[in-house]
Each structure stands twice: as C-alpha cells, then as structure tokens.
Image (cartoon, rainbow, N blue to C red):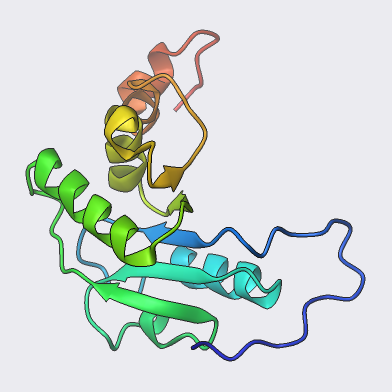
Length: 150
C-alpha cells in the first residue's frame, strides 16, 4: 500500500477518500509529468490513486502516493476497442468505481468516444463524444463555435 502523509488540515473542502482515481495516459512517454502531479496532489489528500504506466520504473509508478501501477505499454496506435477492454480489465481489478483522469489527448478522446462502455466501472464527466478530438486539433479548435485563434 502507498504511504500517505497527513491530509491537509486546512483544505477548503472535504475530499471523498472512498472513491479512487485512475490516471490514464495512452502512448509511450514515461517522463510525462502531468500524471505524477495528479497522483501527488490527490494522494496527499488521502485519495487512493492508481495509474496506467509504461513500466514499473516510471516516475508515476514509483510515487509513494500510488496504490498500484497497472503496467501496460501502449503506443497510441492500438485499436480503440483493445484500449477500452484493457481499461475495463483494470476497472475490474480496482474493484470499485474509479474517477478516470486522462492526462493526454489520446486518453481524453478514447474516454469521450467510448463513454457508454466505460460508464459502469468508471466515473467521469459526460461530454459530447467528438469534443476532445476537435479540441485536440488546431483546425477543430478553430472551428468550434466562438472560435479560438491558433
């Protein structure tokens, strides 16, 4: 089990420590820092954290705030159905609904486009299925209502 520091005594809210988080990153870039930051920040609040990692030696996998690293090397070129099935297997191993925390565009797109399949074992905000893919593209971002100059 992960060692935990004393949760913040003066947090402006009370975190729900009964609901774990799962950091999801698709692709092979083991030094990605976004997942480590989320693991540390949420773990310090006493929230059980899990992560999909390339190997057991990545910074995310070695974090003292991580309950468990699910070692699953992905490239981002896998069929989406294979990735969804892998996430569902991880969800079954966690054993209770977990909040999905995508830390890259590929993971955000996958979750949005497969919301119905992932909704049982995972918690996440419902969005228009095509929104993350459009926002991940400069052209798509430009075409959004109101437009964003890129």
